[in-house]
Amino acid sequence: MARSRQATRPTADGTHGRHGKRKLVMAALASMLLSLVALPFSTASAQASATCKPIGGVNGGQATHVWVGGLDNNGVIASTSPGGTIHVPFGHGVYLTGVVLNGTNIVFHVTVQGANGQLDLGTANANSNCVVNQENFGPLPLVFEPEVESWSATYTDWQSGRQVTTFLGTIDVS
View 1 (cartoon, one colour):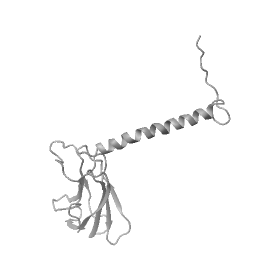
View 2 (cartoon, rainbow, N blue to C red):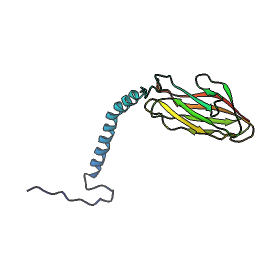
View 3 (cartoon, helix red, strand yellow):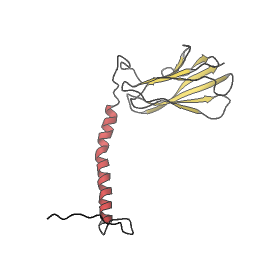
View 4 (tube, helix red, strand yellow):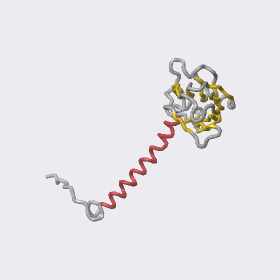
């Protein structure tokens, strides 16, 4: 006849019986070993995800780049040609977008000349085609009227997998 196991009450040290500590140590070691075995697979998975899959012709092998554009079609400041300036009328906004490693987002950093601090704006994650869908932000200005804002962005390059921070340019809000 099979012997049934009965639950034991924890001892004062929180274990279950005299072999409890050994079982806990063995369970911890097994967990660590499993995580080490899984590490190469997660790294390979991350590298495999660095390939952008065009969806409906979108992306089409575009290089990584991010930009902020005026909602009035009044120009963009972008990582591909940093240092530009666009004018955004008072009370209007901008859109935030880019092509980055799929599953990652873009964090835009805004500082206002003459003010203290920095505003960080995170986007949604990029789709499997590495495109961050356009997100509208505004209205501007953030602090003063008129104001000049300096914009930069932190994002993950889909070709290299490296995180990059790039100065984009300035927005003149008046």
